[in-house]
Length: 227
Image 1 (cartoon, rainbow, N blue to C red):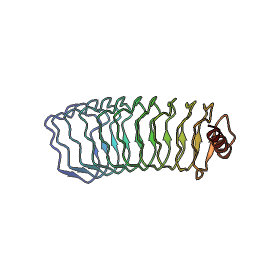
Image 2 (cartoon, rainbow, N blue to C red):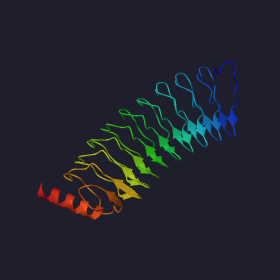
Image 3 (cartoon, rainbow, N blue to C red):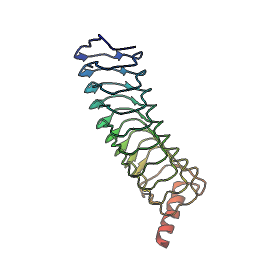
Image 4 (cartoon, rainbow, N blue to C red):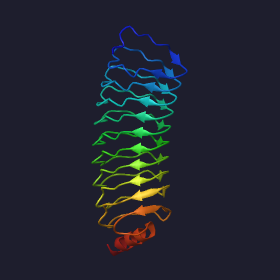
């Protein structure tokens, strides 16, 4: 469906459901939407200016390219960009109140993430994260389950849920968060060489080379001293 002839108010206190809209060219969105903004059928964001703030969720699950996309300055709920394969040039809000879904993204080149994500951050399709700076804090789980190389990445200081690095075979130079609230999944790790695990980190570990986080930490310390 087209937005031709559609005139929206300057502000909407509740939700705005435009799920059937396939093109928003020429549409002027409200400055603010107090509830959810559903644009799930939109495949291109070129030429659209989204509201400055969305109080709850913003759904753009069929959007494949971020070209021309300017996101709201504030998103209080979930931001779902499930089909996005490249996020180059995208500017995220300073904070996303709940979950940030980017599970089709394979490369994080050119991304500046929000400073904080209140829920989970799903980057389960990411193969390379070189040069990527993550948010300082993630309230729930961080999914990096396709990442095979940790070179050049800086993880958040705090992850409130689990941290999935289940495809990582070598974590040399990787500094783990000070705090992980749930599990640390390192199911493919074959070596602890060069790994740095803070003394403050205490979590459940799934790893073939160590039975728990304390054993892995001691292995790392011995390896680093031997260098």
